[in-house]
Length: 555
Image 1: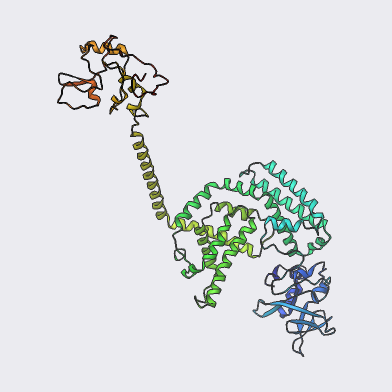
Image 2: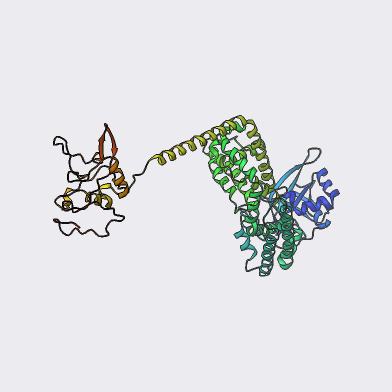
C-alpha cells in the first residue's frame, strides 16, 4: 500500500478541516489515529462520531489494549490486526503505519487500516501489499488514449458511450473554432479544454450510479479525471502539440543546438557524482520516449519518473552484487542535474514545447504527488541547462564557428567539383567522324578517274570533316588559285611525294603557302568524262545506302 498518500486521504482532511480541535488533541496527547484506506471510504458519511471512533487511546493497565476517544469500543492489536474485544471475529488489517511528531517533538502514530472500524458501507476492497488490483477506479499507470478508451467505453458502463460521443463532437467543434493554434488563441483553447473536462467529468458521475458516491472520495475522482483527460488528449493531443511546436519553434531550435554541443559534458561537469554514470543506460532508453508527440502530458511526466526509477533500480542491483557503493542514492540536490544530463544526452527536438505541454495542459490535480515533484524537477532541469549554456558559452561559440567554417569548406569543395565538371568539353559529334554520313559522302566527291567507289579505300580521319557550301568553295578556290584538273588529288589519296608516308590526318586539307598552313576545302570539279563523280552539296544523306554487292558501284 505504498501508493496511499495519507495526507491526501479524505478521512484525514475532513478531520483537519472540520474538526481541528479534535486533531489538536491527537497531536498534543500523542493518541493513535486509524485512517481507513481511500478505497474503503466508498459511500461513507464521515461524521464526528465516526472520527472519534477511530482515535485510539492506550490502556493504563493492559499492554496492546486501546479504547476509542468516545469510549464506545475497546480493541487489541496483535500481528498487525485490530481485534474488537467485544467481537473477536471482527478483525481489521493494519496496512502500514507512519510516525509523526508534534510541536514538542513528541511522536504520535497514524495507522492506515484496510476498512473503517465503524461507519463503513460494507464494501471491502481487494487490497494487498503485493500490488494487486485496488478495485473501483484504478489509477492509470500509463494513461494512454487506448487504455482510457477501453475503460470509459467498457460494456459495464453503457451510458458512457453517449457521453463520449458528445465529447468527440465538442472536441471537433473546438478545433474548427480555434483553427491554427497560436500565442493569441492558446489561452482560449486551454480554457475551453478545461471547461469540457469539468463538464463531462460531472456527466460521467451523474450518468453512472457507481460513480455518484465518488464525490466524497477525492482520490477516486482524480483517477476518473485522469482517465477522461487521457481520452481528451488522445483525440486532440497532436493538434495541441503541433501548435506548441510552431509557437516555441525558436526556443526549441536554440535548446536543441546547444544540447548537441553540450553532449560531451560528463556528470562531474554538471556537479553530479560520476559513480552514477554506470547506471544511466536504462534511464537513457526510457528518456528517449519523452519526446514522442503521441504521449499525453501526464505520460511525459511518467517517462521522467521511469527514467529516475531505472537509475535507482540499477543502483540496488549493483549493491546486491557488491559492484558499487551501497551509500549511492539520488538526493534532492542530484535529482534535477541527473534529469538535465538525460535531457542533454537525448536532446529532445522540442524541449520548450514539451515543458509547456506538461505545465499548462495537465487538467487533473497532481498536487502533493510524485507527478508534481517530477514536474518541478523538469522545470529546474531546464534552468540548469540554461546555466550550463552560459558557463560554457566560449566553448559553444568556438564549436559554432568551427561548424560554420566546415560548412563553408564543404560548399567550396562542392562548387569546385561542379566547375571542374562543367569545364570538360563534350565532343562535337556523338558518333566518330569516320562513321558520319557527311564524311562518307565527302569521300566520294574526289576525282576518281576509274569512276568507281570501293569501300575498302575509306579511312577514318582523326578529326571531323567540315563541308562548307559550294559558293564558299568556289570563292576560296579562286583566292588560292586552285585549278580543277585531273592532277587534283583526292583528300584521301597519298601525296605525290613518293618518300612521304600516307597520313590520313587533317593535313590533307591544308596547303602550304609561305610556310604557313591554313585549312583548305576539298576541290570543286565540274562534270566531265574523266570525272564522273563531281562534288555535289548534299543537304541530307540518302536515307538508304545499299551495300548488297561488295564490288562495283556502291550507289
